[in-house]
Image 1: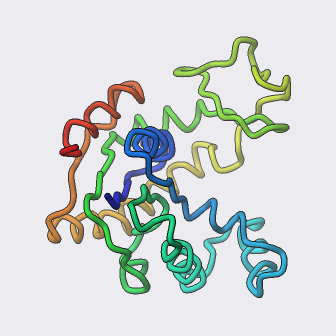
Image 2: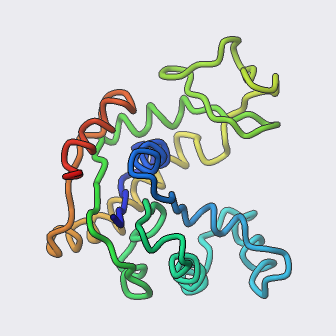
Length: 206
């Protein structure tokens, strides 16, 4: 089964994607991961990394080409869980991978803000915590490696509101597009990851 996860920042796409991937035994595909893993030998390596380092959106034609190249690999013939694409109608214009079901993880704007402003990332190993929902055993210290936890630059209130504005402007039209194709399923994204996953699982039909 080929599944798309879509939703605003903080809706839990990565977490739910991992749970669905494990449950169905299919690969999880994240555009962000693909872009971060572009090898130094690649012709677009320098350009892509410059744009990411500056907090800019990577050229969407390049992102589309890399995603298409990835999804054409044999390991995805049995299915995948995708997030990070279908964020705008420009994405749709550039590349539309085959999708069986699109799950829209819906949460209110104030919940996105609460989740993201309380997110902390380990400087050393990259593990992610949430001071409300999944706090570390010791405040500001990573359970795994003892590294210091910090708030990402894009998790400030100003940056979050800007991302949510972009979602409403650019991604909501894509949600309508997927609804018209008859593959969109809206999922209440409130609650624990397990609760949200159970809602997704109930409509997978497997």
